[in-house]
Image 1 (cartoon, each protein chain N blue to C red):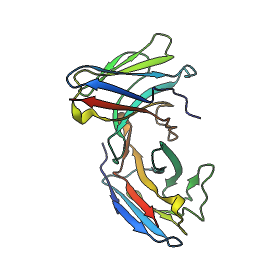
Image 2 (spheres, rainbow over the protein chains, first blue to last red):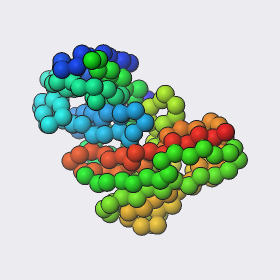
Image 3 (spheres, rainbow over the protein chains, first blue to last red):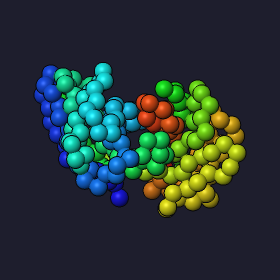
Image 4 (cartoon, helix red, strand yellow):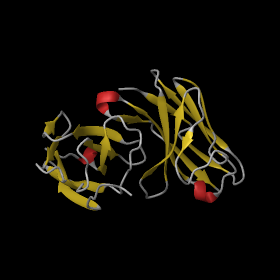
Length: 110
Length: 113
């Protein structure tokens, strides 16, 4: 079973920040939080990952709670091209066995 | 990160036939992974392909149905054998991309009629 829980779907207005939550209450100390997204019919694309500190890159920010039981992916200025399914995955770094949950289907509205 | 070329991008096949999907990586990698994504569903790992050894299959997937080859460190194939409509899915290969996590191919959309 997937180790994460995400809302099934979310809408966001174009230009606004999209905040995608993920619950991973059973995360282990050596497991990272990874975020990927899958634009329709393409392969998943890596977005960002983190262990316990907040992380930011050119695509997004990742906020991890102090107890590490949940996290939020933030797309600061959502565009129509950000419409996709977003997957939150917890895994030991380098492990091959990703367990994909159902993800969040984000729809960015014009 | 690695660049993956996957062929074919899509195919429509008759039931009872087989289809071989190719995955080419632009760098040498130890492990390659094959996933299945059924319509409207999430991704499920089929097997891990190591060069020089037999593939390791996940629960629910067997070698007779999904034989895998890994002749070198940049190439792998997945065959979907004796296909039925239930095999209609997107099949994806993947490699570990280091700091960028896993890199996935663009997928093969298979429809079995």
